[in-house]
Image (cartoon, rainbow, N blue to C red):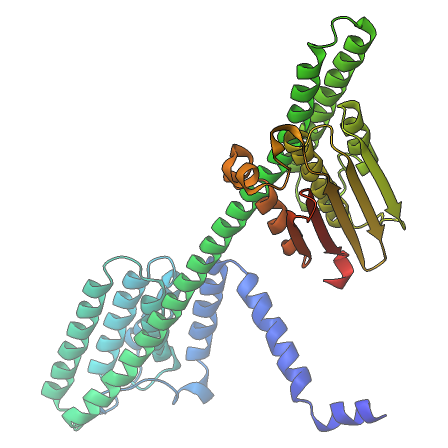
Length: 411
């Protein structure tokens, strides 16, 4: 009851909504169609008797009786508006000449004279080339009109001509402001599109880095170990099988990325995930890395961003473990809740050469991180979802990666 009373007492919100819808509908129509409708409506209203006293007038000359010439000149001030967005300068020229002739001959005021204001606005808003020339021509034409009506015997003072000229210039100025804002909006959209393209390129670069470095690292480690297994043909066969499996997984993930690139928005979000964390652990074990996996809770089956980010964090961490602490015990823990997923990967210190996976000399001096696609890429990926990411050495010389990734509906 109160809502109904409010609507009856305050009808303005509904009227504003209807006006907004009407404006949106009008703006969605082609510009040429809108121009034709404006010109037609203004022409028809020009011959409506109640509107005959509404219009622009200059000179205050003695009024002559309307005739065929006045009708043609009135139409010359309204019909050229069909060209107001395509050829605004020509529209202004025809309308301005018709207005000058109509006023100089002393015909009665007409609603069609408002076409001069519309033509001036259109020239300011839609004229893209030779704007200064068009402006100077308009000023020159107005000065000539003032001189002409004054010579004919206009009783108006020069101050009246100046005030009328300021009103005309104001209409041109409004059009210029609109054109400037339109150009700024177009530039903003262009920069936004460029930023979106750059962000997408960066994201795909991270994806490609994660796929290639992980699987190729596993293949290199297994190939390097195979040369020491010539005395055990069975183990050589297992190593080669592992290399082949890693290569097939790399091809599968690359095909997934290509399908996402070819897909658009909604269809891309329905693409299958490239794999599970358990598969990464099995692959690492096959490469000789002792990995222990502990998973608590169930991941969200619908939050693909969380799943993919979790997968990439584990993938990158195991890749680093294979490269910098091969053969060392690695612990992977996943903790899933409806609100977030915690990922923790801890690798013991490498004993060979006395360098651990978390050693600054290895992490910051190697090509892996210097390219900016390793831990830095993981941090950007996690923080993009509103999560937290830490990576660093632990007290015993090992290395720990931890990521707190919120679910999509909590960000």
